[in-house]
Image (spheres, rainbow, N blue to C red):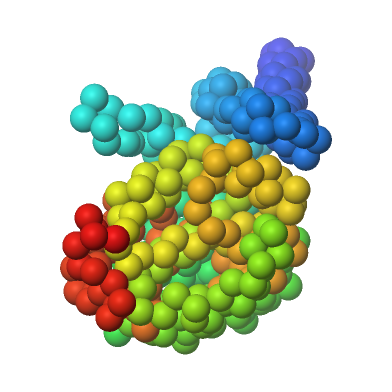
Length: 368
């Protein structure tokens, strides 16, 4: 009997190892596909080549489906946590358009299954840190509850600290009321005390927490956003201050974000909708200069962009989640910070309704 039990145990280990290898293969294949696409964009010489290269951007959906096939039946097993974190990071921006033109996340049920598995099987796992960091940038409101459970129950102080950082990052989407701010500050203090030296994607928790504290002080709703000064892809000077008096939609983005095509489409549609009105769309893009030039040269990206390949401007705004939009009024006061989409558009439209045309501008678009 003992030999039979040992055999079943070994077979189980063998199966888990094989499925983990499948999950790692999917992740590596996706990264290789993205690297290959980046090279194609870099070497595309003509507008036709650039358009063709942009259209060939790897679709993350089949990779996500393959990853789910590898891990979906094994979420109760600890080895699945790391690939599950990859799934949580990769899929939120993947959306489907319904018959009415609205959008919804394609993999919402799968992401919910991962959250439930963490709550049911892994709240005390020593391998939860990558999941905590993935949940920190998740757009699903249930992620906050999972992070707070990990924070309350996990035996490891460092894991608690990363969960506290994630919870603080989640809370900033709920508003700037005093009780929320107090909670955010308490979580950030816990993160710094307990997990300052933990590295997440090459950055320490201490640095990420400091960035969140900066956001609280300078980049929350009602604050005046810092000016940005830089150049566009043709090395022409740009600044936010030069657009004083206009509503500014400030988009931090790059061509590798999940569903980048949708980000480009909705931002272009926003520019078209408000053309002739006192609104400026300004991107901050950290692609290689050649790639940004290619996207703008053929009209794929028609709005103005700061070229920020070294992330200097993104660091001034402590950008941790991409893409991210700020909507600013004519005095650069922040009225919205979050994902691109309908909320950003509605905020911009409301501000435009309150913005008076400049003295040398006609209020009638037909006369411009």
